[in-house]
Each structure stands twice: as structure tokens, then as C-alpha cells.
Image (cartoon, rainbow, N blue to C red):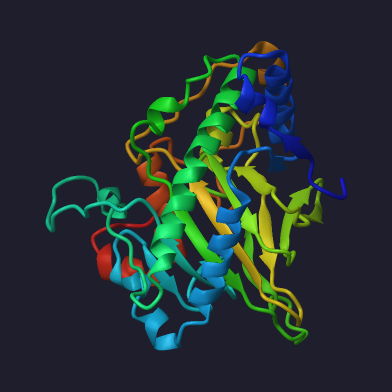
Length: 339
């Protein structure tokens, strides 16, 4: 496979019960089984909103360093804020990207709360005061993506032999979606083996990930042992699955490893990754599937670090974040043992 499959969800949006919708759901399911990545079109999000968010992303990364650093992710137990170049790690190596993390505007738990530590993953965002349009556009885009995620999950539920609203309780009326606005700066060749590690090889944590990307390629997907570039297509989002969806389907749906390589010279790569996460209280036990699908499953309950994937989303999410952001772990989670 030299490129990612393209699927159009407009028929499903128009009539989720029609023959064309059923065909879409089946096609989507089959591609999520292998290769586990697709380019999604027909999603209904206004392209002007996509462009506005990417424009705001460029403006954010053009702010003076001290303004961005004032929003340091280390300030936030909820992992909301700015990560400087090289401060996030994958596979033990520094990722050469900087980013602004955000999610729904939420209240942080009271200090000294007696609930599980993953409740600290909820809290307010950090926004630059000198770029007032960013928060509005970023939150508008996140909210516009929620119906897209719900429709994708409903299509997958149908194609897995479940009621279409099987996944709804994890997302409606509340969710814990998380978004990263990311810059991958261009780099000069150095000969070092990891000098282009924008983000190292990994797979995602939750259920679904949607990626809005500018025209600069860099996302690479491991398919049949080869790295395939997800070439940007105007108006399309990259869609891939996370480890909890892989676990819940006993390995039938795939959380495919992928990475991002920094561009060499030229323009920077900009992307926005939306992790379509359920509430942290959500538990994903094995999903009953038709026998013909279960026969194709390949059980895999560990991540690329060899750690067991938890069924409680809050636990799984916190484990991964503590590993990626040791600065936040030291400041806000000294009482938590990572493992």
C-alpha cells in the first residue's frame, strides 16, 4: 500500500440507515481493521474553520518565546498548555516539535481531593492574551469535530454488529476530548539517526484520533512493515484508532504505529490532532462481535512499551501522559507511581 485509503462519510451523514450508509460503515470498518488509518472526507466541517485554525496556529508559534513559555504545560496538572521544542519524549527520545494542548474548559478538582489521580486531567486551558481569537476558533473547531467523532463511532458500532449508539454513553452529554496544536519545524540534515524525529513511533491511547494537517507532509504510518506517508488531501482529515479501541475489539480494529518526520528545509509542518476521548470514567470491556469478524482478530493488549493497556480510560490516559511529560509528572503527580 503506497497511500492511505480515502473514505467519504457524506452518505452516512445524510441517512445513517440507508444502503449507502451501511456500505460506508462496512468500508470504514474494513480499513480500520487494516491498515487502521484512513483519509476521511464528507465530514461536514466548514473548511473555513479548518483554515482559520491553521492560521491561528501559525500566529501562535510566531508569538515571542516569553509569551509562549508563560503558558508552560508544567503549570497544568491537566496537561494543558505549551510544550517547548524537545520537551516531550517518545520511546525515550526527544520529539522535535512544540505544541499547545487544550480541551474542554473544565474546573480542576479541589486540592487534596480524595478521588483517583486521573481526575487531575480535568482543568482550565491556558491561552495567550495577545492572541484573543485563538481560544474561540480552537474551541469552535473542537466542538465542530464532536459530531464527526460520534458519527464515525456509530458507523463502526453498526459494522461491528452493535446498536449504532453503542459508544454514545462515553461521549454524550460529556466527553474528555483533548487537542494538540502542533508545529514541526523544518530541520537541516545532520546525519544523526533521530534528527528528524518530530514524534517517534507510537500508537495512540484512546478510541479515535483526527488530524488536520497543512500542505506539508510528514506523518508516516507503518503498514506491512513499511512506512507510508499520509500525503495531505485538501478537506480531508486523517483518522486512526487508539489502543483502547484495539483492546475492546480483541485486536480486530488496529491501533497502527505511526510517527512524524520533520520536513527538511522549506516550510514547517502544522497539524492539529484531536484525540476523541470518552469521559475518563469510561471502561471499555471486550465488545461482542460477529463470529466472522472475531475470527480475524489478533489479540494485543500491550502498547509499544510493553505496558498493559488499561480498560479504564482515565488510568490509561494518565499513564501515557506521565511518561511523555516528566516535568508535569514531577510537579503535579509526585504521589503517583508510573507503571
